[in-house]
Length: 354
Image (tube, rainbow, N blue to C red; front, side):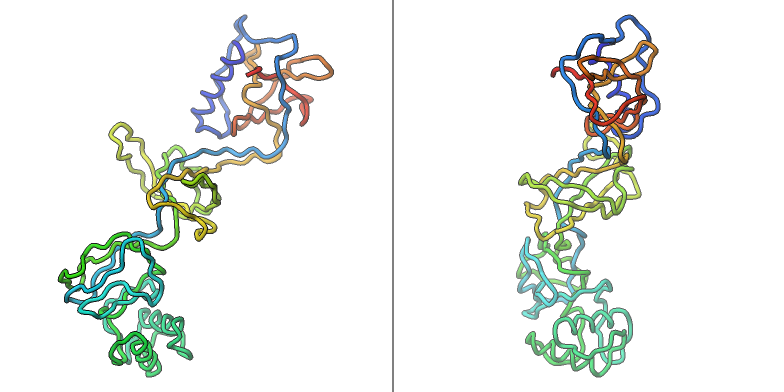
């Protein structure tokens, strides 16, 4: 078996195991006379390296925004203004207007489902008070869920600042809650349309950039929540990120020619504010899997098939070449982990000339 045949057999075996994990059973070359045994010097050499070996794979994804959701009308009437697609709305910003009255954004996970007034209690009251403090109208308000007389006065100050009647109570016709800043993906109604409570007006996302990808189930172990990844952006730059969510259910792909089961994976950026790129543009995520610490490795092309069915490398030292039997470990980054008698970092091994 020649060196190129050995390489093909080894790479095939590595692919069967998942493209980078430890290989415990490789196709053996047998003891045929064609087994490669060089006695002269090889055409080229490469050093044995010592260090960490990390298995990885690159997966195509799509650059987008976090947390798509819908925003529904809180009051009926005529839509007189609506935030435009692509715009970002911060706390206190305008989302839409009905009959000339603005509905503004406040932050919170509880939906705005009722009119909040003096004496009310609940988590929605708590988050209203947090927003009034953040917007500068609720200094001194306690961090609790009770709509106190002080809350009434804070609401009046907020209403006055936004040109509203100072009623001291607030409902869905004045504010909408979302978990944070929202980006308008699309407006689902146009100025002049009649609205009704609960009617969909906007499709929104979070304002942070993310990458969405569909990962083969066979590669699922490479995408663990909290694991660090690298992302190649559409402009050719790279950014670091973290796997923030991994789907629990596999689904077949949309491509009729490829029904491979896949899971949804979301990657968030470590510095999302610096990430640029058109929504829905392609991005490539490099997922790192297993890491072998401080191991010896050589290029895969350095492997030889020995007559006894094992593998070896051709060590070149002091102008002479000798074969050394090796045990194989993990394949990654075009290299293979090896161990064998007398091997050390810096020794040179034979490789093909091209």
